[in-house]
Image (cartoon, rainbow, N blue to C red; front, side, top):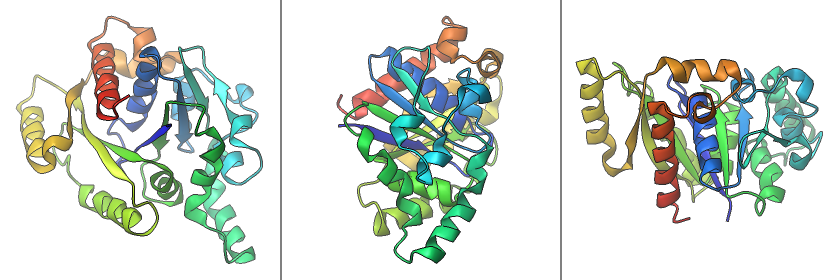
Length: 261
């Protein structure tokens, strides 16, 4: 069955989009047919895979508002086994559209539109990865309702756990009311600078807090990893010998192992 994984943290700058791009590419290289959904109006996951506005006929906003089917918005990338439903700034207007829809139809379920839209894709992909924006708004709630599990990227820096309680409360709320099968896939430590003691202290703190939910893989802070999106490539294609390439390959293998496929 298709496994849907949302990458969520309402804090910005923790590596959600970087991980969404590179985990998706790594899963593809492991032979898994993968669809990346860009659910951030900034569209960084889309541009990070080399798309520009001229390539986009339909986006995730069109899908969620019913303007097109999900299959019509899928773009095959040049990377192995990897497709994407892109985002544009249009997505910033989805809140307004959903409010209007609720006023017109009292049965409109604003938090379930992404889930309903993805149902036709359930037999077409091994993994669907959702890159969420840094908020706990309507689009992120849609991701949590649609997903089987959540990966929480946490940077190895001071205040790393800031806001985590609020995020966990949101996950519990979704589990209780809308998606009882939702679980935490894992907590991913990102942006480790091995030259500083604070990074190692944060690792110890997070592993003490989340126990076996923390992935063994730790993503390093590397210039090449930051450069790759500006070239429209995942790190595995931009710099195959990079330590970050190996890290995301290992993360993909962990995800596959945890899901038994």
